[in-house]
Image (cartoon, rainbow, N blue to C red):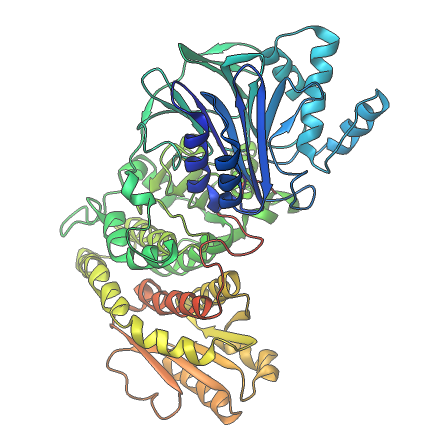
Amino acid sequence: MCGIVGYIGERQASDILIKGLSRLEYRGYDSAGIAIANGKLEVRKKKGKIVHLSNDLERAGISGKIGIGHTRWATHGAPNDVNAHPHVSSDGTFALVHNGIIENYTALRESLSSRGYNFTSQTDTEVLVRLIEDVQKNTGLSLGKAVRQALSQVEGAYGIALVSGEDSDMLIAARKGSPLLLGIGEGEYFLGSDAAPIIEYTKKVVYLNDGELIIVRRSGFKVFSVEDEALDKTVHELEWDLEQIEKGGYEHFMLKEIMEQPSAVENSMRGRMLDHDPFVQLGGMMDSIEDLKNASRIILCACGTSWHAALVGEYLIESLARIPVEVEYASEFRYRNPILREGDAVIVISQSGETADTLAAMEEAQKNNVPVYGICNTVGSTIARETKAGVYLHAGPEIGVASTKAFTAQVSVLTQLALKLSQGRTLGDDELKEYVTEMKAIPAKIQQVLDSADYVKEISQIYGHASNFLYLGRGPNFPVALEGALKLKEISYIHAEGYPAAEMKHGPIALIDESMPVVFLAMQDSSYQKVLSNIEEVAARDGIVIAVTDANNGDLDALCEHVIRIPKTIELLSPLLSVVPLQLLSYYIAVMRGCEVDQPRNLAKSVTVE
């Protein structure tokens, strides 16, 4: 969850670190800090957002050409100055920043305390610092080797970076479960939890794998395994551009990313959707399509918004390809001792490709010799590197904590996969061509929905002070109801629940009164008459009905307080359109309530800890 940056070169490190932390702030904003090595260690850290640290640094005027920085999402210990990173060794010789959780930190802390080490914070990170000190003290090893030996005693996940006040030409980093990459410049290097703090300076990067440690000097870098074996690393080229990670004139990243959905969905289909045979061309999956067609069961594993996309994927694959699908919370998958059989296939879905629970689900399946495929947005991520095959979203970077364009891009890719699995199995060429034609029309139809944003904004002004919302949908729009409720909860802090519309009578109807807004996904599809009956039941109990329906539907005006109309499409493709007004509704309500839209409380963008 936390963000790590590092720099070594000939520029002023503090400027680069602060800019990098600002670009990583979506990973955590409880506190921030930096350490600069210039013959000694200069450490500054502050509770709260990066701006507080930046103001402090302007007053301090710290100079140095190597350093590390950290923006924190608190796990162990409250957000305050003491628990903020970096943490420094007892003798002040080195500083460390950390993303992840040291699971055996309590036992390590007790052991170190019994040997006379003192602790000033409540963090697991300070325990790692003291452990490295202890190894150095007892072995006389160099700092790099002491770090490696200390990490062999650690259980859990980590991405770490260290600098030493005694060596201003050495940056050390290591990872296990928390992403790190090194940007390669001319006589300078940049460390980051992801590409955001690096892309301004270079597109050449090296990705660290689990169990790897890197020692960086101005003259070059060396990567080692946990067994101290020197490793050769491939240099990759980043796809992102600097302007993609900036707001581009929008007030918030979330609004920018909502508005980018026509291009994001189009990019997710570019070169993949054809008007003729083979109709769908998923390059990264083509060698595995026949295996998936012959799978006895496909298991989709994901978390949060990606889990909702997976639920839509279940409708798509089962309806179109007639292959059994199960959708699993990745966070629960490995803990319930899942039954995995020969013939199963697992697809993990993650925007970042680094979600800790999803990686654990991937590893559980691989341990049981089940092939694992990936759908992710981030090139070079762990899921991209460690799955058998997969598909990139190509949606561009998503900075807002509340995911929007990643959802529609994931649904787009899952639709393409479902169509490919259907070819030669359940759908003929004419049907495939109809879907391809309609999919190509989806970006323009999303734009039509976005063009109605002002009307959605008007609705948000009326209900922005509601205490509760209910979202209801059927079929492939049931997951959209879940996603709409999640968006509202995430950024406006209004309690909201999503349900299958038919389940309303099995409990939630007890909540409905004249102050309860109920959002219905009411497309004129195979379940429309049933949804219409549900709307009438809410109206009879004086509930407030906001309906999302097809553009030509006039049935609902007399029943509903508000009707949001979207273009007509094929039933299974409707989630790509129906979700958009729900994203806008949550955004405008959050803005009206004065909430931090891009950085909602207690949340962070990439969940890299359990």
